[in-house]
Length: 116
View 1: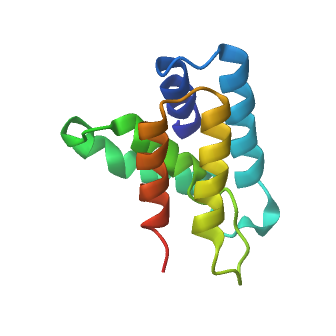
View 2 (view 1 turned 90 degrees about the vertical axis):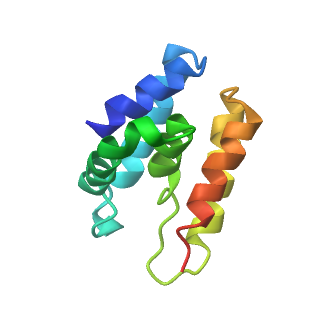
C-alpha cells in the first residue's frame, strides 16, 4: 500500500522508473529488518492510512509521503540522532534522484519534527 504510493510520488516528481524502484527497495529492506520493532512496513502503511483523510488539505502531500518513507530509515533503539540522520539520508537520496530541493527540505523538516 504505502510503498506503491511512495513509488508513485517519486515518478510524479520526475524520478526515472529504475531509480524510483531502487528507492522503494531501500525503504522496503530497511523497514523489513527484524530489529525494527514496530518501525516496519506495517507502520508505514498505518501512517499512510492516517494521512488519507486529510490528503486534500495538505500543501505538499508528496513531501509528507517522502517524510513517511524516510522518517525511520536510520533506526537504532538507543540513539538520539535517528531523526537527524534519517533527514540527512532523505536529503542525500532524494537529492540524488533530482527531487526539488524545497520539497526535500520540507520532507526533512517533517522528519526532524518527529524527534523527541
